[in-house]
Length: 67
Length: 256
Image (cartoon, rainbow over all chains, first blue to last red):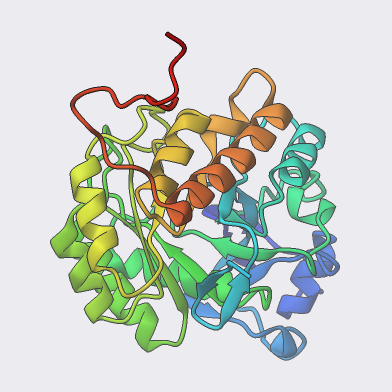
């Protein structure tokens, strides 16, 4: 499946079907990140159940140094 | 005890520190320690998925010791600021937000219309809102009318180090404020911090002046002391300025 991830076109492996799966694939399960799918912020408690579909626009953001 | 109260929160330190532009994470950690700041600002950005394990400053911090103040930097409209604020809050780490809506790329001065609108919406959504604003006393008033928890007028343009350019306006804002006034942006030196606090500001937020100093750790300590000195000076009440001299030693009992 092809999604737009942080602004880039990315082909995801077939076994990635949920937000949890996506975060695991990038080794981000232990990191402090926030996920937005098609403009909707996904609550942490929904990572396992939130399905990812072809064409989704996904943002994974975190805190960086700033003033 | 003299504390800084912002919404439901209370702080001993009146120095708020930004976390951008430090040369390395180790220096940054030492500077944060030396500043004794309790509120640290952060920006919200896309994670670099080409290097997801890049070290991150947040991971170096004992998060129980600090209150995080994410900013909406990068937003040029109220909508963008609201989106960033919601993302920040969804981290589960904080409900404070520094509203920052920039209206001009060269001066990085805030867009007053977008700033007011974003602040209004985020107050409605239950955020603790600290708004970075122009040093405009009327806008500061409007922001308080929509319920912000602190107003943060700039001393001068972000990162410019020019210090306080419009002391008069800052004084007007401070005199009328019903919420804390935190002078944010443009601070260059400890003298600027002390000046802001002597004018009666409730706090100072700075970043570049520490991060880009020759010795950021020493400068962080200097800023901390300057904020404390300025605050104490304000509370103590300075003497009025007089046109002519007035002797400090007794004029009586002179040896003749």
